[in-house]
Image (tube, rainbow, N blue to C red; front, side, top):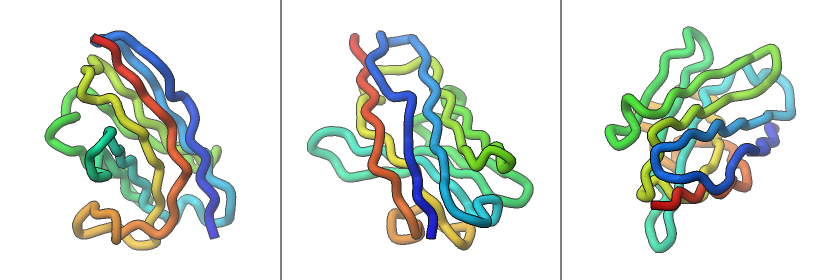
Length: 124
């Protein structure tokens, strides 16, 4: 069992930056692939970024590639999402998720545990 708690959300102007953190409670955090998903108002939840547990290879949605950076600190049981050059269309609730197996495709059904989310609002 893994409990995930996101933090770092807030209001930022377009072009600004935010860093989200996801703290995990539970054993063997380092064995989980970790992902960030987001859900904008009226839209479905979508993949943003993921990271493997072994070599920490990152994965990104095309919409955030070059602007967002995912990282993890297994000693702190924490995964981060550094978000730069934010746009109003990045406004969403951001969810942290964990998967026992590295997903072949970063889909909602591939994730085993979810946090409750952190709201990110980007003003024009």
